[in-house]
Image: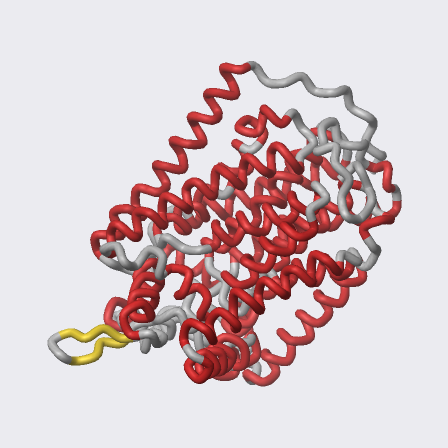
Length: 468
C-alpha cells in the first residue's frame, strides 16, 4: 500500500447542497423517531424501565423493585438494576411528568443529541470543511440507520452516552482537560462501559482528564446517592448493582448460568455459547419475564456446531478477551505527545468501537457507538484520494457493514433471528474494526501515511500537539 499523497484543500460544498443535506438529516432523524413516539402510548420497553424506576425512586425514596401491581398482585418486569443508581436519579428530572410527556422530552433530547454528535464529528474531527458537516456526515449516519431506528424506537440512553464521549474528546482536543474529564465521567455514569475510554486517556498520559472523570463519577455517583438515598440504601444499591451487573453478568457468568442467551444478545459470550453448546436462542428472555408469554409458543432452536462444556466455552471467551485487550493496549501504548493527529483520532474511535466487543450484553441499537469510526473512515477515504489497497479494504468493510444493517432493518421474525443469533451484529464490529486497525498499523510504521488535516481547531491540546 502506497502512502497517501498530500491532497489539495477541498472546496466547500455549495450552500444548496449543505442545506439539502441538513434538511435530509433532520427529516431522517424525525422519521426514525416516529415509532418511538408511538411506543410511548403503549408504555413498552425500554423507556418504560427508565421511567418506572425513576418514578419509584421519586415517590418512595428507594430503588425500583422491578414489578407493577395489577389487581393487587405483582407482575414482574425488568428494572434499571443494570445501571448505576445515578441514572434513575437523573431521570427524576422528568418523571414528575406523565409517562408520555416525559418520554417525548427524552426522545426529543435523543434526536437533538444525534444532530449534535454529527455536527461535532463533522466540524472537529474529520479535517474537512467545518461548514460541510451535514454533507460529510450524511453517509455515516445513513449507514447506521437501522441502529438509530432501534435506539429511538426503544428511547434508549446510548445516544446521550455517545454525546458525552464525543464532547469529551472535542474538549480535550481543544485543550480543556477539565471539561473533557467531566463529560467522560458522565458517560461512565450512564453506561460504565466508557471506562475503557478512560483507560485510553491513561495510556495517553492524560492523568488530569482521568482524575476529573473519576471525581465526577465519585461525586455525582456514590456521594450524591448517599446524600439523596441515605448511606444504608445507597450501600445496598451499589452492592446489588455489583452483584447483578458485574459479578453476575460477566461473559463467563452468563455462559455458565445460560442467562441472556436469546437471539438479541450479541455479546461474545452469548454468541460463542450458541455456536459451541446446544444453547437455545428462542426461549430464554431473562431481562423481562413478560416476554416469556410472547414467545412461549416458540420451539427451542439451536445452531451449535459442536457440544462443548459450558466451563470450556467460558474459559475460551475469557482468553479471547484477554488476548484482545492485551493486543489493544499494546497498540495504543504510546503517549499522546509522540503521536500525529490522525493516530489520536483513529485510536479514540477504535476504543469507542471496542466498547461493543467487550460488552456482555450487546444489542443491535448499541451499534450507534460505531458512528465515530464510520465518520473517520469516510474522512480517511478522502485523504487517501480514494486510491490504493487500503481504500479497497475499507470499501469492502463498509459494504459488508451495510449489508448487515439492511438485514437488521425488518421487524424481528424467524428470518432475522437466526442471523442475529449467529452473531452478525458482533461480526459487523469486527468488520468495521479491520480497516481501522490496518490504518493504525500503517500510521505506526509511517506517520506520514495520512497528510495533516485540512481543517483543525487550531488550539493546542493537553498533550502539547497543536495539530489535534
